[in-house]
Length: 407
Image 1: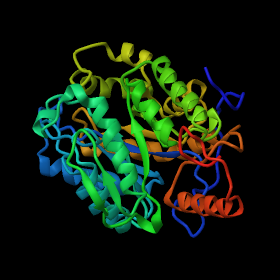
Image 2: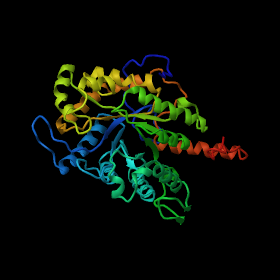
Image 3: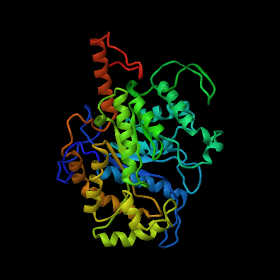
Image 4: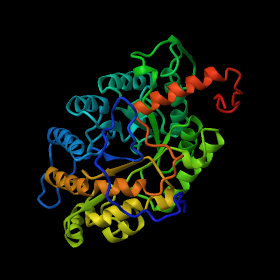
């Protein structure tokens, strides 16, 4: 277990929330938000199945509600098959950007394996401009095997696709003219991706994985964020992958292991009375498309971070994650899955809003000063300005032969 604070993360009241986007980078040590996998699932309590249109517009209400209660991030997944509907995340996020002012808009997965990295570079740079910098993305291989042949790819090359495609994407955002030759796409010669990133700073990238050490290694190599969506696994599994990423992040010279940028997934269902929460959520859990008809709700809750109970139980369980992975930068919750009706999801957000100040205070308690805050566009712009100033003052700085970065 890692606990960099040396203390138990207990909840305390906190001051009012500071807006994310400001003229100077706002202090947000841990971004708290939502993610959705975009499933369309029958409500087991009444047999109703929402239409695609209803679910898409429900997303808009959920995103606006997330901003209203003070959350920081809204992230959506990418799927190209039923029972999911989110085949074009950037289109959806651009629409949400026009209806919100503060939310960071992200993806729960952008398929780096089957999407063309040139198109990813173009789409997210455009979204970055439209949202005034309120965008980042999470890259992943996805969990739907048939998607590979649909886009002309081979699932047996999934890791190789992820590594090579991101190598190109990374360059497209940082070089005005790119010459490229790889295994999986046609060569590029003198290619310029447009539009260029906002203020010359690419969107922050999270590399998401629940099982692949190669992806943790990739995130560490580039000094990017690592997101472990720990909704299906015991915390011991999450700890092992996060710790691997932290060690390799330090190895590549980006900072201390405790300074690596980590994000976690999670899920909850709350009612004021814990017995009411268990009774109401059980039929949804039992019939969920991913984990239904398997372990019992009690078994799954004991083995994974799923928390079904009172707001206080959700608060305490979430804050305990620091004991397993150390101080981290992003916590996203899955709450609109398994056929839960929109009314219930919005009620969940009201309850989350009530404990949000205590959750922020708990994450901040005992947090070492040298642990980075959650990345924002403003903080990345400020960091680049500092790096340029340092480079001007140290023109003869030695270069790391592994990463290509200056010391």
